[in-house]
Image (cartoon, rainbow, N blue to C red):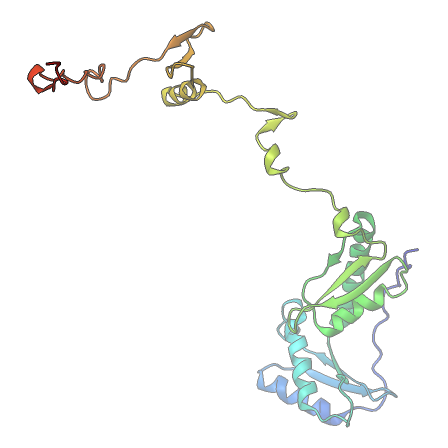
Length: 261
């Protein structure tokens, strides 16, 4: 059964001791961008750091579809020191509650694509997303036993595929496009009649309908079903006449046989 939709996420609570080092790093980057902002941070029990930014220029820091915020968070995580063996990003940056709004929109997208996948029996895919946004999609459909999700694509172009578990095979897909080549140009299994459009088509059709008879002469219909002889070609003037017979040999050129003495 489809998983019930989760309620809207509660606002993030920034509690715990601040991470002065990460906070100072973010403050320096924002100041070098020429943006005034108020920055605060908090660390949870697992060591994850949450940094909150409030600024009148929050739209610049967030960017289109959160790309500037994602780049800022990536940069801060690469510049901050990590413990040995820890490959995950431990610093999360939120600006004016954008992460909560984005998470709610992604969950709505996940449930909408899952419903479409169940109705059509086809895979649905999202646009390329970052690792955190893909994780939101996976988590939103984690409890749905009719849907499976996985990520595909190379770095920078990875997206989430949402597929029904009873996905129909490729061979079961209905045929699309035109039929086989042998059936093209036919209606109801009968060949389509070709109608001449100009004098050249009529001449070609007449030539195609003509066939040699037993005497080697070409005959074709005269329009009433009676055969008529094909006219001689007038190309090159009067046309060819009957081939002239070879001249008879002169009498003196003919050798006489032996005579009886």
